[in-house]
Image 1 (spheres, rainbow over the protein chains, first blue to last red):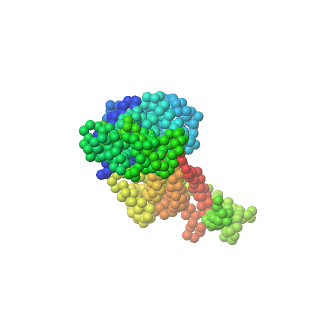
Image 2: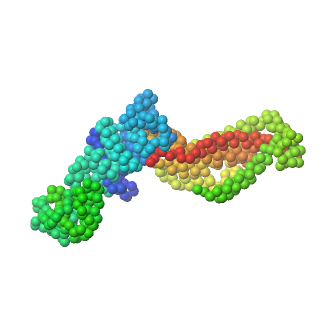
Length: 355
Length: 275
């Protein structure tokens, strides 16, 4: 296994820049998840690491070796595709051993490695089957097996779970986490599913419009998002944002009232700011208070133990608050919502986190 | 469910067409087993005990040059299929997979061949073949037929290659295959049905052609079977028994080839590759 080092990576399609100065380190044995909305460049970045996409500038180093000009196979990477991309005219064993065969690996060695991968992935009974005779989950495991047998320096996963149904997705996710531990593999993983990102990653990289917005440990991103984009992207339902401006004793939200929010030092009165608060840090409250807002209930979603109340504030802004248990709340109710001061996020006019 | 009435209509039309298409062939095969007098007196009757006469076949098989002509025809047809498929698939792969300058222009140039009949160039082809000292060789025929069939082959195969999921080629690249190995071990196996189609399209006109054998290889023991049959057709006397028998036997090899290729015409070969 090896470390992946990406410096100043640029990629343009014609005049469109899809990757802008990407700097990223994937530690040896690390699990890095690239997330972001579609078109943010995360798949392009992965394909650039794989060598399937030529880059316009910058360097990619794998295991201390600059690989910019190397073909995918020479980079010692293995990629698992969203579509699995199994060779349809070969059985499972041939699919997994195919790359080794062309690398000139002795037959006995190929068989041993395929058997080993099949054992790890519980594919032994399926070795003689063709891909079309397998279910989606089994195909995915074969695709992973094909990556394992090559003993690559880095595993690259391109949205590997997107084509699986919900139950299988959870199983396979656990399976991938187990494999990561078992093989001590360096993994770069692309997904748009933040549950996958939060549960699998050592480090999450949030991308937007070809840039890295923030990278860090999953919970760091959750508790201390660096900017509005990351704050809105990580967490479900998304963080609520309230626009206002700094006054002497806190933040003025206009018709929604004033909140006594602790501010970082040196904030001039009148500075426009955005307050961020996650649904789970808001709760329905009985009356008025220092950090309370008046609201009308628009919709209540009950998920069982928890649920979400969609609230319309006096200014017309819609906020979502988590509710616990059966509150008896119903559409049209006038109520108050209390914000948890410890979990308030403050963002400046440029979208950056303050304090 | 399809309505039984419309299904019946479809089958009736197809059946009628089959009858129409098979009629002349049945007539040839039937009459090849009859005595000469019966061929002319009762051409539409099947051979009976009084009219049966295998004289045509004895004459064909006694003629020592005819087996050679069969072999020539088979060589030319199989050779043409081989080179058409090989070069056609290679060109189709290059044109669909690689982006290079003049890509579109080249594709257009190659497809012009579909529209312009190669026979218009017969005179210059003869000159070319003569200068290459290839007159009365099977090589000349194979070269000309390959050129004739390449445009359509490239056109059909390009469409099929474009349908092969991009992920498959990229997976192969990650697996460390060279571009040649991707072509031979991934692309070719997956376009087998398309190649069988092209083979069938290619084979029949080549097997039946009289024009180029007449122009390029009319002598020297390099005649094809269609040309070889002509020796029984005289200006004054025609040996109809032998002509019909030779034509009937000429059906067999091409029929065999068709059976071989049509077994490859299975659909859904790529199913299971992706998703």
